[in-house]
Length: 191
Image (cartoon, rainbow, N blue to C red; front, side, top):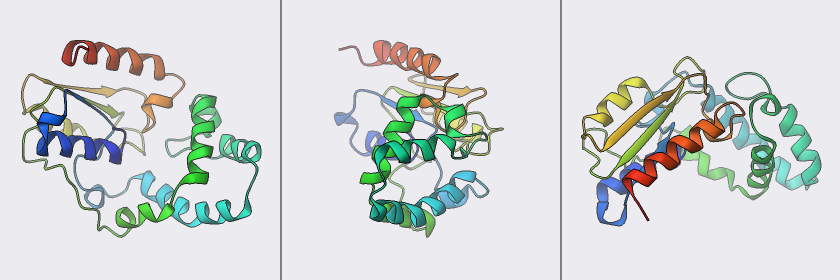
């Protein structure tokens, strides 16, 4: 699970571990987002909440939206086109046109209910990857990784030095990310 999906995956692993063989958490908020403060993603979420419904109403052609997103600033600096793989921008464009932007309301209003309890262990094999804490859009904090690691030796954590929040899509991180995840899954949850 990436970002908020990571918090959901961690919560599911705590609540219903019998349904989960292993989890990979990618820069997940392991504390409620309103407790994080100062993260550039919140500014991005506010902009998305306002702009996505308007974009959807315009019926902007997909090719034009891809061009706009490519030139758009990323939350970790530079433009998205400078930071992420082209297929990631296409996926963002498709997602933008399909997203019900009201899903952001609980995050923005500070009313998001976390299903993950940072004070309880995660009992399934877990890989938690965090963005570089020096990046403005990093969500998982080193202290969050330390708290999670107390769950036991089945929990592996790693800070992805130089990476922002979009670790899996970042030009200089995707191959390393893939290798780390596949290695973990081959050991933790063999097919």
